Image 1 (cartoon, rainbow, N blue to C red):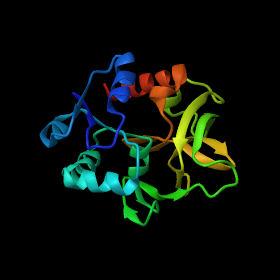
Image 2: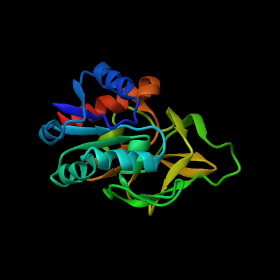
Image 3: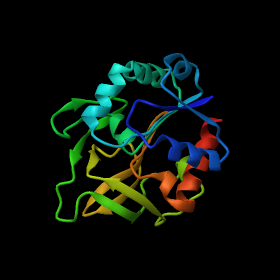
Length: 201
């Protein structure tokens, strides 16, 4: 069983459909026992970081995600879900994240239009990573965000450039994050989810 976390801030069914198209059955749930018993955890999210952290804590998921990740269970964060994997965010204040990846979430302080919304190409930092096996450098993916992960870049698998380098795919051991929306990124997104499915089954 693979679970998509329902904590009140997510495009749950589009993410579920994306995985369904690559043949991975998922269950949308907020049940802590199901989360603990799952083979993998998918953490989607849209909206504000502070609201997401508050809801995860209220539902008891915050510590469970950390516990399960530290046991080696695969965890995938998508969009805001990826940002939640980091140490903290400075979105409308300062908020502690899950701390599964080192770094901080900061506003995109650039001259280009923010939010960064639309298609952008991927540049591979770790071309050997298995999540990239079915896509090519330069392939386009779909972003919608105003904040980005600021770190020492050791976790970055692939990035896009939008005046600054934006981590697009990140990894720390069994924890992956995807800043863009794979479920809205056509065949490229499909092939990323396909590769992820192969990693966790």
